[in-house]
Length: 182
Length: 440
View (cartoon, rainbow over the protein chains, first blue to last red):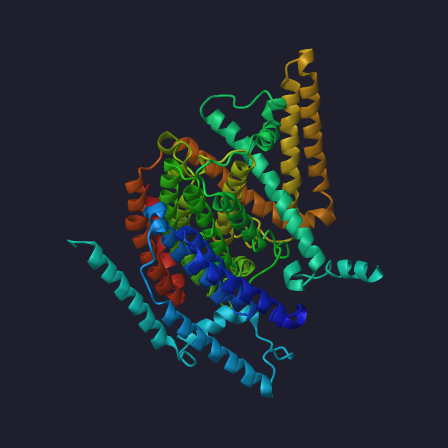
């Protein structure tokens, strides 16, 4: 019942750095491409690498949901909208947001925080401990269901349902705004 | 060297998939086998589709290249490879180049979890069915980008149609799948999303999920069977490539090798969704009546069917060899058809060998059920006229989605009180049937 002993571990620094590089390169491409479709495709790459990160962390259910929702659902709708606008005109238009100073400040702040965390943790313990924690990958879906819906252990049900209510409000809002007469 | 042989042989007496056993050698062998098998299936489908459609329309279909046009798909593949590969001038080169590979990757990757038998799958995932739905939903990205990158009107309209269509029908499809997954939770080992686990649940509950909670399973299967045709862009839902309106839809500007990738992806996607339907509702690799007709005699009888099927195909080949025209010009074709029949007959004889028979029995039943779906696809294409786009959307959102939601609630309620269902509703069904039989 323990896949970690049967197979070599996946949660290794190699995989992490590989996927992180893909995500960062994809993220940079998203904001630097002039063409919105190219940006969207870079974003898809980033989201898929993120799904792979979840897989690496022995959370296949989260990875599957990530692929279905973000890469398969939301990004298709993104592309759908982008294709309806004229790309040529959009590429020639001047950028109208002038927030790069704020952006740089926020990026350095966040980066500094990450470096601070990295340096402080490496003092006492290593960031990637060699001892493998044996997560039961084959029970991941059931474990998530138990956390959400079980009578005894289901502590996150309220938060989960509230989040879905938020999405419902967004859907109703979209209908109200798009339709003049309901 | 000895270690390597030991490593290879060590898998043979395990009862797990190569992925679960962690054996890289056999995993690669299985990947290659699935890839080759799929390619052969796509070639066979190409020929069968033309022949069956032709016979439905009282035509002969391909007859010239090889006996009864058997070599036509190979001739077509050669033609496609030799054809000039055109990228339109105004196209977005990179996206145009990447799009067919996205579609092919999505269509082939899903076969990682398809269970051809309890041990005959590349791997078994805890999220099997979720993985299949997720990865096959990535194919729409390839179609959309292909249509957009062509920088042409018809492909763009085809791409927009296809994204709207595939996203809408995915919802109904997901609801039908969830109702089948709920049924697995009534087994002793609990609910599961794993493809192998779903089939084992049907084995353990001694019923195909098609017939579980009688009308409910059939309705779920019906929703899935409609949605899967829309999801693979096939007739009568082939609006993204409606040739009477959009030339060839999203792949109008593609030619040669790139076009053949779209073709390959379409057919392997059809096989993939059919395998989902077979796994979820038709008992996957299980032979018909594994519980009602159990025992060693029945096991033996059913295990002879694969070999007999191939012998039957061989007999058809030999019958048609005898019917070939006796003109000297047809001599090579006649010999070719006889040779093809001999190969099929040899495969049939090989399938009678006990060691082979036991191991490939499950693969045969799985493939036979999938083949039934493939025939249905061709039958639909020969029968139904194409839907209009607003009709398509109406069917998706106003019929399939509400039905799916109601079905989900009904399955949940019935599943919670399954003992009431077994002791009250099922006897009522049988009573009603008995009453009807007495009246008529």
